[in-house]
Amino acid sequence: MLGGVNSQFEAMQKSPFRSWNGKYDLAAAQVEQTANKLDNAIAHLQHRQNQIGQWNKIERAYSLWDKSPQTVEMRSLAQGLQSPQLQERLNSITKVERQELARSQASSARQHGLSV
Image (cartoon, rainbow, N blue to C red; front, top):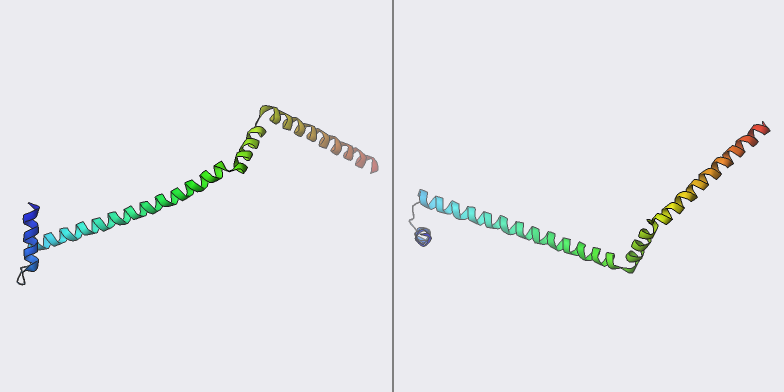
């Protein structure tokens, strides 16, 4: 069926006395519409390929960072800092520091009160 339409279309295009009838206009509009759809699809495909290229670059950079010795060492240190024993120790140091600060402020307030 398409072969007949195509040959008719070609014949109408080649004819110097072709008539601009509805069939020709419709066929020309369909060809133009199809060409526009193809252009849009190709542009969309190229955009997606560019995005994939960018994502691949980002993935490679992340992978290099993730496997670098510095990152591995920092990850190890972070895990160590999260250990229950170390957290307990840090909490006790903070508590002692608060107590010492409170004593220091109380002592300073007493001395200030005596000197007035």
